[in-house]
Image (cartoon, rainbow, N blue to C red; front, side):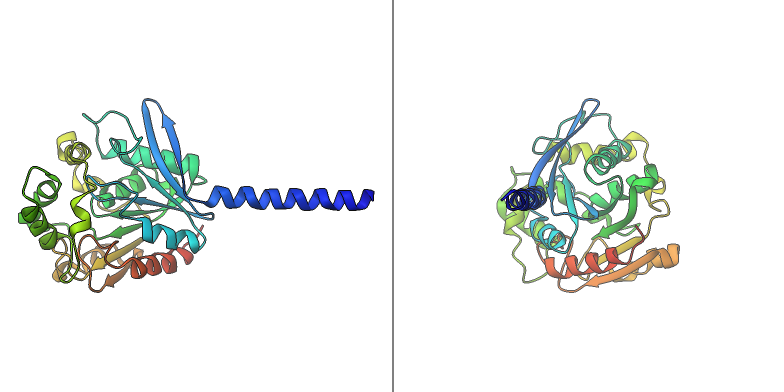
Length: 286
């Protein structure tokens, strides 16, 4: 009888441990704090950490849901820190720069990612990802540049994200610019009419040159391994720029072209994006 009770207790404790682990791996939100900054982070999965950083003025929740779920199912802890001004993320939003945003990300990695992570930077997010690799190299296993613009992209596109985010403009005009710059032909851009945060976008826009941060400061992403995901219809990176990173950084760079996608990329080809990240992440050193 005593043996039976001991066995039952062991089984109970084992089941409880598995239950706690399963609960921890389910999607939930954590608040990362330092100084006067709070970064809300959506946490999902268990395993090596992957941090996902969204495009300018957008949140890290809806745009990444599909891909994040696939990464978590493949055995990764997926961390989606919300930029300042979105969700429960707060902190100074004026007089801040890419260095501050990089510190936000590095702190999330330290507190929730076991101190080391792969960073996926989508569009504007690749600026922050690269800056993090420069400022905090010990926390970065590698950087995924997802729909990252060319070093010199067509300047007619520079103001497009701001116009799309401007809800005072007619919806038809905003849809026009979404089709022009973010979605490949045949893809419905209507879902991206929502999910914009102009104040955050302005903070991010000012966080570069206006705060003395130059492209040369972050371009190389330190010495981190790089995975470049190039949507084949992305106007921010025309085809004649597709080899520029490998030409400059050689074997540090792995390049994957994603067919039938533009600058939005994640809602357009989630399976292809997830498969490319998973395959590359599994061959990286710890």
